[in-house]
Length: 253
Image 1 (cartoon, rainbow, N blue to C red):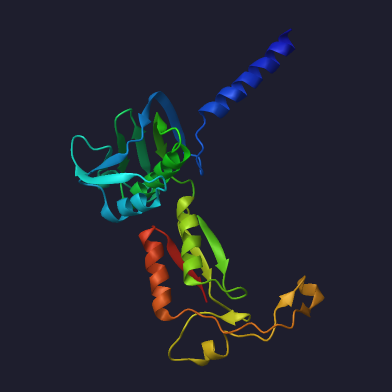
Image 2: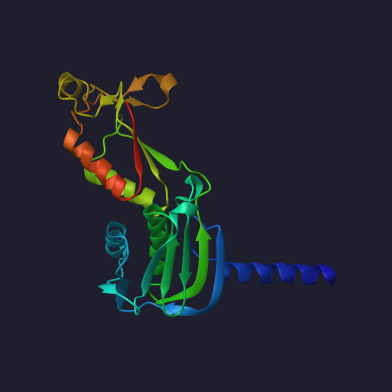
């Protein structure tokens, strides 16, 4: 009897946990589900003090056809408060708190970067509930465990266009990563324009064939890989695109 009760209790606990755990990646450090729901309105009223660049990103990323009204005050759906910088440290530059009540959404952070991370959480919540239009009332306190959170992209062996690189950066931002390791030069290809040394791209951006299989095989496909590289203006454009998403580009040269 005792063992059967324990099995039933574990099953019910798992069901309760799965029903009450939010579908968020990465999962916040502290989450409390409160009573009630925030009903997603057709027009979201934005408070006048919201950081502009990050808020524009938020508006553009929501795919559910919502409309926005800027510069609302007491009736705003989205409200932001900047925490005193005197109490901030390097460890909590990315801290944010998110409180969703049945009527409003409150975001607090020390920096715009923390506000941006809060918006990433909010975007996931909006997208997860765009069909029923009801986000559970909740409170979240979160900050990343590691200060360096990054992904690597090797464009030497296989070139990615600027648009593809930007899409990659958007995925990093979505999952709250903050570092983009960009592998730009190697014996397999030189991908960054250096105006003083044009042969780096005229010659170095090409190769007569590509290795296939394991390195020990020493086998190649016999297919020339054409000249692909980024101009300096394209590099600057990507760096600015990443900065707008609070991502640091670390080039590997």
